[in-house]
Length: 156
Image 1 (cartoon, helix red, strand yellow):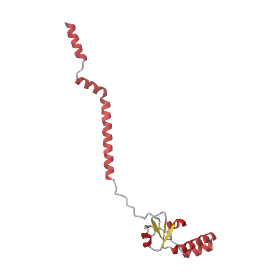
Image 2: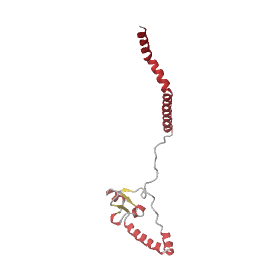
Image 3: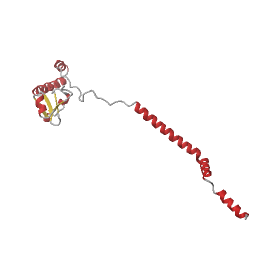
């Protein structure tokens, strides 16, 4: 019978209890578990700190206070006479500008067929309109009645 009791005792010794299993697992993997938990905690704390810092530094919405168009160039007649005497090429350009100005005097406002904005004839954007697309208006009311809006760069 002693063999039966010895066999029974060996089976009990071979079968570890739940607490022994946990103790064995902890001894084998405990350092790795602590390292992983530490990394997760540091990552969570860092994320939360960054989020809170971002909330604190959040600025209001951006407000644009400048007009969308560049300011219109001013045509000065006093300078054109001096420029004609000094440089013949500039003289030719001034003659062209003078011709454009006489054409623009017929039009109080200018618009393009491809746009919904009307400009002063001296506006830099009005000078870029191709002649075949140019529409002339004699008044603001005429331009508005045809569905055009004033360009904020040159009409205030």
